[in-house]
Every structure is written in C-alpha cells, then in structure tokens.
Length: 233
Image 1: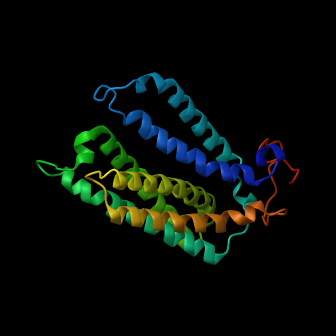
Image 2 (image 1 turned 90 degrees about the vertical axis):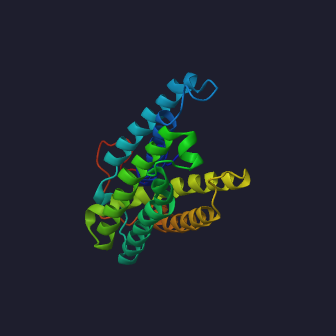
C-alpha cells in the first residue's frame, strides 16, 4: 500500500521481510530430506522456488530503491543501541543457539536428535547462521557503534530481518517444548523471546521516522524510480 501511494518508506520496509523469506526458503528448499521422510514435498518445489526468486528480486530492487541520503536522520543513541543489539544477536546465535549442538556433532558418536534426524538441515542452518547471520551482525554492529554512514541502510535491514527470524526461532522453540522434543530447552525459549522483544522494540524505534508525514531525510527520492517517486504520502 505504501508503494502504491509512492511513500519513500516502502522500499525500506520491504527489505526486512524479503531478506527473511530468502533466508527461510533457502533452508526450506535445501534442508529437506526429500528421500528420507514420507510425503510429497518435492511437488511443491516450483512454488517454493518461485517465492524465493520473488523475494530475492524484491530485496535487490528495494535495496537499490533506498538511497543512503533518503533515510531519516538517525541519532547517535539509535546507532549505539542498534549496534549493541546486533552484537548481542551474534553472541546469542553463536554461543546460545549453535555452540552446544555443534560441540555434540563434533563427537565420534553425537547424541543430538536434531542432528541425527536431519543432518542436511542441521549443517545448512549452521552454515547460514555462522557464515552469514553472525558475521553480518558483527560487521554492521561495529559500523553502527562507530557511527559509520554506510551502516545505516544495512542496520535498518538487519534489525528488521532479525526480528522476524527471532520470532520464527521463538515459535520453533515453543513448539519443541510443548511437544516434549528431546532438543527442547527452556533457556532457548526464554532467550529467543527476550531477544525478539528487544529487536521488535528497536525495529519500531528505527522505523518510526519512516512513517511520518514528512520524513526527516537529507535527500530526495531518485527521479524516475517507481518505488521512490517525488509524490509524498
């Protein structure tokens, strides 16, 4: 609706969910044990692929349609808070979520049900979280703490996307607990919920200036850009 109205917040708000979909559907497509479990998930591959391609295209287009100068002015306190939160996310992902079962997987006889039941998904999640999520959070978090101008756009993107990822991880942790899953952990539930709530608060704080009638930005929308026209909401 914001894009149809020509509001400059539209591409910024589109970045987080599109990145979240790319992250989620990559794991959903590649992590499935297609031949190991009964079912017909392979018949849904074209649909999942279409959603992935659409989300990736939208992420690229939204990134290009969000000029650095077009973002609202961000206070030093917002930079500092977002930077600390992003570094906390990286620490929680590495130490809280992945280190315990990673150590177990390194043993000669691992005991983790999560690893033994779906090894492909296990290593795929490890690869994406430890190779993409954590390094991106550390890099942008340090940039935000140092008030680097280049960190503003990825800071908005990552805080929003990690809020959605945190919500999905919290939902998964709660589901595992209610089903008495052997890998369930009350600590993970509490930590994920707390991190998601904190991220949601930071996301609302960062995104609120975007939805003002006259966003406080230092630049104007690029001419000829369909997602960032001159007409303001």
